[in-house]
Amino acid sequence: MKKIIFIVGGVCLLAGASTAQDRVFTYTYQSNVLTPQEREIEVYNTFHFGRQDFYRAYQSKIEFETGIVKNLQASIYLITNTKTGYNLNNDSAVSSSSSFAIANEWKYKLSDPVANAIGSALYTEFQLSEDEFEWENKIILDKKIGRNTFAFNIVGELERGKTTVNKQLQSEKVFNAKLFFGYAYYLGKGFNAGFEARNINTREEGEWGNANLYAGPVVSYYRDKFWVNLTVMPQISSFRGATYKGLDLQNYEKLEARLAFSFEL
Image 1 (tube, rainbow, N blue to C red):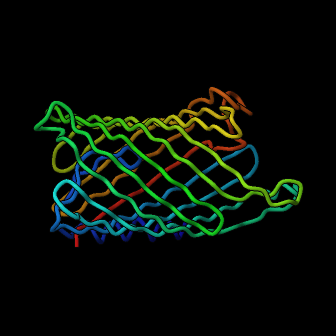
Image 2 (cartoon, rainbow, N blue to C red; image 1 turned 120 degrees about the horizontal axis):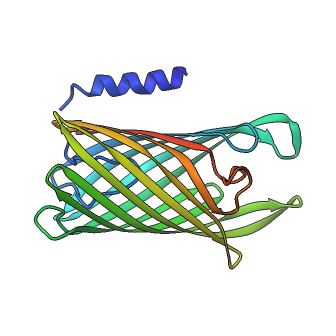
Image 3 (cartoon, rainbow, N blue to C red; image 1 turned 60 degrees about the vertical axis):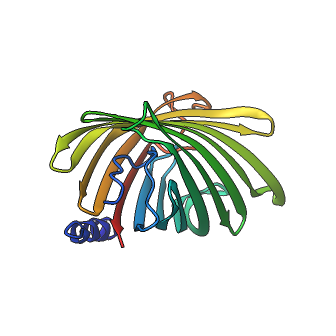
């Protein structure tokens, strides 16, 4: 609770500051990029709640983002993950763990969501932690029509890492195919409201495994050179791999919530 109060308090203090990008979603990317003269700090706080047994997780991502040349931006960020849940080797014990990662992303804008028929961008990201490497690529599409903003992402993510099977260390390769959709309506005075949806499909050892759908409301606010967004996403359905009442609560959470904010330097 103290952690949440601290984060929200920090957001309120920054709201008086002077948004380079009027980003209105927290999970779904839009095609806009920073100009070469612009610099931003972005902070993402993601909370995970509820699996088949007791489970809580929190991810913090702090990102420095800058425009490189026209239509191209890059960023570097630090990620901290903390998890608390039942130890699978001892049903009566609760264990906690932490991990750290560093990542680099590049985004190139191809067309504009207002001036062109559709906005588009290409995105690639590399992430490295102590025992895992991830490579993610996105096709970003979006469109602004009056007060309405639509965005759609097609994502492919490759994960390589180490896992323990029968007390032996083994290599692991996982491919995730993801789809994201966001819609927001501009309410005026910097406020937007809408929803986001996310579909996750996992392929491991040559076979498709989990397929889950999340969806929920998003609200956002921007002022001058600052924006803040909040999305709450419950798991709606598991098309493959369901473990409890049509949901996959063994590998995924019942609920995710993400609070993100940014300010220009």
